[in-house]
Length: 297
Image 1: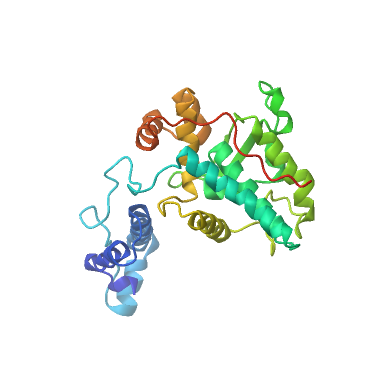
Image 2 (image 1 turned 30 degrees about the vertical axis):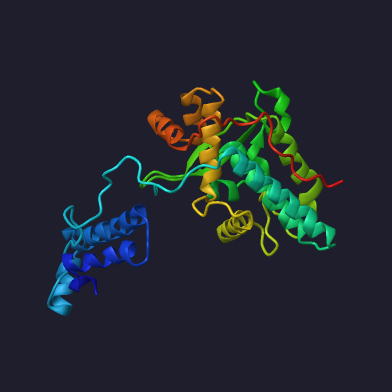
């Protein structure tokens, strides 16, 4: 019970890394939840210490200190094996997603609709450098025009309403500008020609699920892993690799690092430069266009 906790009990968190393989940020989040809870229990204004003494003969204490808690010592704590796609890997991955639509549809199965959704979803995540949940949570109404990019029509800029939040803050919003000409056609074909056939097409979500109004994170991970493994690609590649690839390709194409920083919602310009140095591939540059989403014709 909380009134029996001691600083030694915080050692349980070491198992999160050593046994369960949790990343450092998860470890800090758990400890960061325990610390303010103990502050609440031990603040004299609430009287919990007196109540615990009266009922149990002991009282709660703060158990998480700087000396026994994980610290945020490095600016970048990502796992070193995580990386961006190389250009051939990215094209192979997206081509495979398109081919899966043709394969399933050729068998006369309705599963081609979610396969088409997933192929488009991966391309949109890459086209705007979105995180998993930022992609999943997009709604039909989140797209708008860019007065300086009229060629993109209704898809000049999506509004990311649930960006990664800072500690103690609500989700961070940002608008992302469309930069590649293949993007609007990819999104429009999904919305106008394919999405209406989905069971939950009345949902406001851009990516409805077969069973509910919005696709889940587990589905994103499982479909991504299935396509990656089918191609025999590096297991280190994950959904977030699409975002890393977006940053890398924009920098390689000569875009201002400050522009890239604003596009992906990072606070520090040097972070993008580090990502670029870490993920660029010698002699490899992005091609002028990406594979189009499989046609419904």
